[in-house]
Image (cartoon, rainbow, N blue to C red; front, side, top):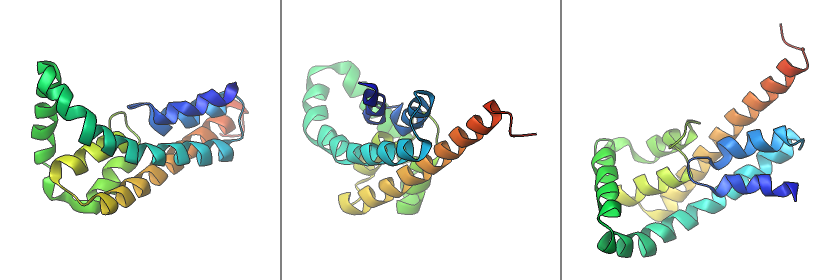
Length: 149
């Protein structure tokens, strides 16, 4: 049942940033934690596009709070509309809360990017973020073992 720690990679805002750290803390091999977390987070990309296409519009019609939240996201994204695919990959690759695959899919959806190109850029960003989180996890392991100055 400990493999459930990897499902954090599918949770918005936590995604692989938390999944890799939780898996390493649970005793999994860091490289396995990286591979599984990145794979699951890449799986979240089409899930996010489906949610944005089929679930958000009815929710917006029914709940004013969802409509306000989506309008707020549109205003925020429109400021960065000209960044393109490289900007999208960098945005997703920065391992901070709110910059993961779901946020990248939202950004691509609002700006009207082609899905396939955007999905590749988001996947590249997920790999970058995963590598940075893996590096942080490895440095934490070295620090705990007393192997750093």
